[in-house]
Length: 265
Image (tube, rainbow, N blue to C red; front, side, top):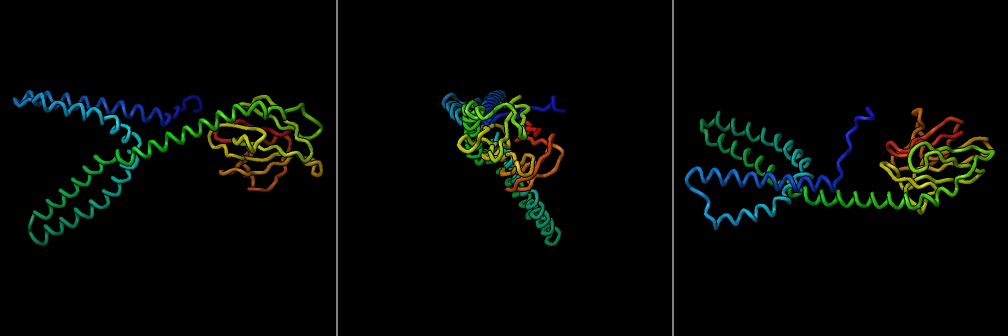
């Protein structure tokens, strides 16, 4: 349901909590190890405990890397399962035909080492992936702020409905605004303030998303899809790319994912 959708965690928050959890896990591991060694009668020497500080220092890095590298780890695990199956079968065949268990045991050792390596190294590709995700998120936020700053200048084209078709906005930055589509006057909608008259932020909004205008010759409004992902009318009809399509009063389009709706009237 719409009201129960969970808000997706930002990349920055994901990296932060990954680092925090990594530090907590490492601290717990060190404490348990220290207690276990003391209980066994072989406590860790005080001089050796200085290594604990180094382990705690790199723990946030591990946590950050695993926060973004778990998908890579799952992908590696899937590939490892395939290869481990082949290794196990080959080792089993060696045991059957030679009667020696050594080959089978070595095969199992290889499989074990392979999975341990994957689990232990998945944080490495996670670090550049996390940095890339945080940078991309930052660029998206800056684009959204630019869109909001440009919003007042875009709203200046809004006017009382003229004799032609009118475009009405429901939701988003322009909720309640009406745009007069004068004959031959194109209005570009998108997120790029340099190209668009109506500037919107939000997910799945292209730099230049669509163009709308009114055609006196045809006596109706027109819309052209210039987006990256395509546009459909609210009733599900797909709008062809890069060509004007006639619209009727009551037709509507949604800009972006869960973005504002523009209705022609």
